[in-house]
Image (cartoon, rainbow, N blue to C red):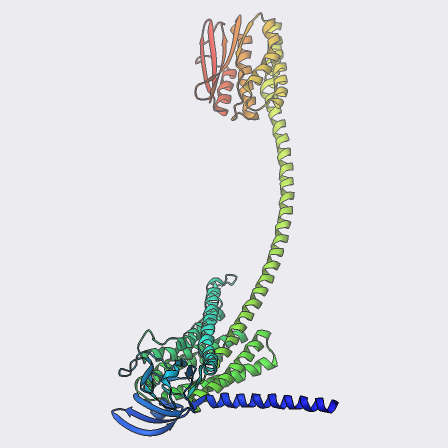
Length: 615
């Protein structure tokens, strides 16, 4: 029983395998590859008929010459298909028409006038209606080929559309979608590198600010490569051929030269003497690329472009060998990373050079456009590494700066404490000096006067007593001045009234008090308040000593505009202010000038007024 089941299982597997093989053979048989054609080629007015094998690479068969060609390919089908067929052409053109059994399937470009739009850059796919096919069929392809634009016709693939379309889509993604992705990435990297070059400025050097040339070279390389790869997507160039071809060739040469200089910057060889000669050689290659483009594309001598590629290849070979040898011995990670990218791109470039310049392949896809992305990744690594290093340096700098700021703050705090201590000491010294000066000018002066009065023997006891009382009052007022609130004139007058009112009563003098409660006057500091105090005291002392008055009136009020007016009025005997030479009057004027106060003294028998004005 077991053997029976095993035999049945083997039979099922064998049948299933046979079914798959039949389906594969059927699919292979249903898809045709048309490689043989009858060609009618017209070059410089001469037409030849010949059998050719596809692919037909125009630049290989007719070097430096434009022309037209018609290819006829016949094929048979076992039966008329019921489902749509697909036609896939990897490359054809530069302009073309495709006919099937006398019906136009697709047309792109002008077959009569050359150097126009180029439709040979991407693969083509055409869906064929079943009604257009029979058992015997003929495909006719007309092309127009320009000099140096890779015109021609690749082998055609024909079959059911669901089998042909995946082949076309795979090729389209590699050649068109992939190229678009590379263009976007290269453009983005180039713009970022250009922005870094413009913004990253080194201002720490002794000379003028410097920018990092590595970023500028990388930006030029990526932007040139963007232009070169983007050419695959441009069927209608902005300038006519062959000038557009010269632009693309110059962009390739500029990319190669820029990448070499980029590697020089990564390796740190910029100051070597031989590098200056390398820069001159690369500049010569750039100039030679213009001449090679003119000779190959404009005058039909492709050997000039071959010589340019040989010079570029030899330069790259020598430089890459030296760069990789140096990286293998001793180098930074960035150097080795760029060396790896350079080696891979060199190998891929040699592969592309063989495929597109030496082999008979027509319609293949270049791989260098994809491997070049490694340079962008290497640049990204360099930028990240430098950014991390710069961030570390910035952190260290900030930490160092914070420590220095903290140290300076501590020193500043200590200095402030010393200054504050010195200010307090100076303030105490100033206060002591003021007290001593006031005692000298007031108390000392009155005591000296009392001594002279006693020595002369002419002064009465009352006069000497009055002088000593003035001395004592000034001493008390000097002490009171230490606690006077700045700007409070009302408090100042009240303190004087408290000190001198007993003397007014002892002199049978009526005191009339007409003082308003005023707000503080901000401009009167402690020093100004002391000057004002002694001015009022001097005026009151003169009344007590010389006026023989019976009424003393003190007025204080505000005036329009925010000022203050202080009046000391008595009804004494009066005097002539201009003729009387008293030390007290001169002291009044000096102190008034010191506090920028107005002083007016008007005196007549029965009415003497001392007016002090403060703004």
